[in-house]
Image (cartoon, rainbow, N blue to C red; front, side):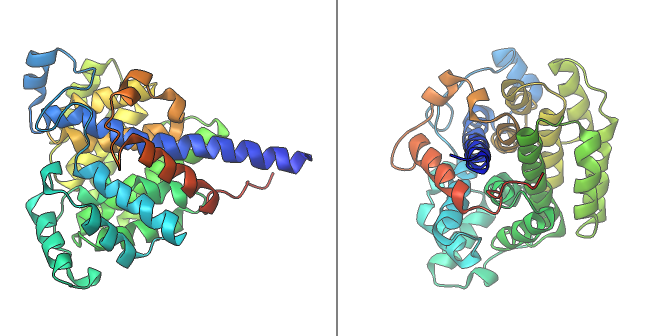
Length: 331
């Protein structure tokens, strides 16, 4: 084996750790937040003090919601096509669709129209919800070497269900943050918001200026312990289903903590749309820290049926060699 083979092998191993980390990070954050979805931060504190483990809720402990189910549809699309084909993604969303996972009313309408044979371009709504951002981590991973391409593909994935400028901006912000986290983790660079924010803001400004301003406000966070961070974040953002009230809190949970566990636990203890904020924080943190950073007890507790934990691992692993991110950077 020559030196270039060693470099390529090392790159592939590191990339796989981050693809799987982002995929399982979404899964873990989603299921950690599931039992307290819609709860206030105060109610979570009164019940758990600080929620730290998988709990049952409207689904059994360790079961994922629509966030992870739609993420799976995007991984399936990338693996089967080697690219993001929106028609295939829409078909995957419909094939995987289980209403009991907690889909919102607008997405249920999208699925109904797809089932009736409507074209993917005609089924989306003007929703400003966070549904297009919660699932987009595979796009950030797959195209991470080219942020303009990440933006382009994130917008295509968004268009299937969400046409509102805020939802478009949120999907791009989440995908770009995942891509930047993956590349930073691969190269050992720090993850401070001073590095990430200007790039994300520049890429979403032309889509929706109010969203860019919402994202820019993250620089006002001063850091601190988890309680202080939660107080600052919830004072600035509503942490609800609106894209730009959910994406910045998820990114803050990653930027202002020092481990995968701390990131997702902060995210799900904020209250509000906890499964989605947890899923997005878990995706970015998993892309940065890699799968080995996810606690074994959480991984062991994840559901593992036909499209459960092992299936997700396999999808993300298979995506690595096909991805635009697989090329070793030139030194």
